[in-house]
Length: 371
Image (cartoon, rainbow, N blue to C red; front, top):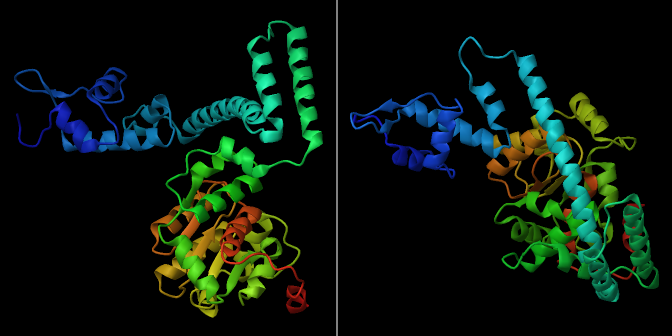
């Protein structure tokens, strides 16, 4: 065997990512991998070029691309499709995925309607499961009956307030390996979004919670990207912790991520602005992804040293990129992967940390400091 070639077992170990010999053989048969060189004993042999191609295949597969689309993306000969043709194929895959998500969301909603019942609705839950077991819905009458059953089950909600804590206990995944503060933070984000699956996309650096709490106790500055995020922040507790609150983009008329992004590019895009903020402040970003990009770049250049960045801007290109850069940086962070996020979620994350330090004061003294 040539010294620079690998057996199929060595290939899978080198590539990693769950690759198996069976998958490699399938990629050969589907044309995703070219035919392998054969040894004198007829064993497949692989070069470093094969390793690199398989690493690209596995990376794209982990991102959710279908094998047929990966094949198109990796083609390098004269039959390579035009970018526009490939874009159409990817748009078709995206629409297919969205339809699957829609169906799964309906399923999740139905299960939440049953499993998310608090103790006051436990009897209704038991009756609902029993009735569902014997329900026949092959006809339109059966579907109508199911709707009627839901109406009957929902009447139990009129007799008591909803217990969010009990519902979350039924729906959240196992978080026994998380700290009490982190579990509360995740729970508050779920309640703010109405989406239990959000837990799977929240990312915290190892020292984020401890660092944030230490600096909040020391009365650090809190800086938000826009005024609507500041409005959602728990001013009462912040004042009692001697923490000031500042808005980066001060235009009070901004009400959307697009407006925040445009304003930042027009007036606030220079890196030097970050030097004006306090060292060890907490930055809360819920609207403009370019604010997060700029902040991370400033930390890399040593011009900005926040204690924590809560980076949850909304967006479909800049926001995911900004969050990836944040997670690769050395700054303590709390973020939500991908396009998910928003000003409310960013404020809720900060509020959960603040609430872990101080009970809500029964007073209105904070109003004086806001006048």
